[in-house]
Length: 357
Image (cartoon, rainbow, N blue to C red; front, top):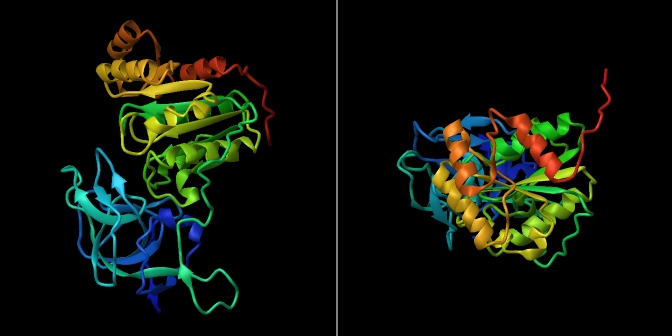
């Protein structure tokens, strides 16, 4: 065990409440969510930032000591990598995403260039009991995930937002909906159920007016899979519905056919039975048509409205309405209409808010 001074603590470690001086051990359990300290070995001019625990983005430079978490990533437009089977100080790993997930990179996206290579310094230690001399491996979260948790939303209306792929406008739609609901007098809570650990999207929802926010990494998961995504979604729905909001808005990160478990969630009949409205986001009219067809024919879900870049102008909107027979509204240019349509679809009227001094 030795002390290490840290330059940057990634947002994936936000719940660990670490200081800039940490203790590390050479014994590293290769398990998802275990926090490790690494030294960055190269500079990059693209995709060269990391999200800090504060939510700010900070540039990463050669020589920086960074705390992140072991995990995997399966991104269409980013790095793909796996959890290492064994690690020791001095080994080389890669920084797989902006939130601080660390693993072995298997595939890159040319637009991002090669990833940051990092030298492993050790496993970050946690000392949960006062006066404890022997630390235990620090983790993303100590909150256990129960795979068989029953779902009870207490009748709270739920708006789900899915997309044809990552970067299809899901977070923009979520923020527009949350903002409009709030301006119409509703109390809204929001979460992200799938993807790889990064707080940017739920922080954007909070900035748009969500009262409470949450995400899968609250349960120690760095990247979701088809095995854990349904349980995570049930747990997050339970957690936020217990707070008795007027509505819950949640984003399914990645795409309908991605590797993070979106399809598994939408095949879970218990979860789907609690979804009051479904928003589909797509980058183009063909994607919108295919996504709506998949939702209807394979998953038995009728989308309430389609949004995303496919609705950026009237051409796409007209094609979607004609070919998919579903409403189409852009989250950027028709945010109020989008929110009002969904509020009506979940059966909630406008409510008067009291102005505060």
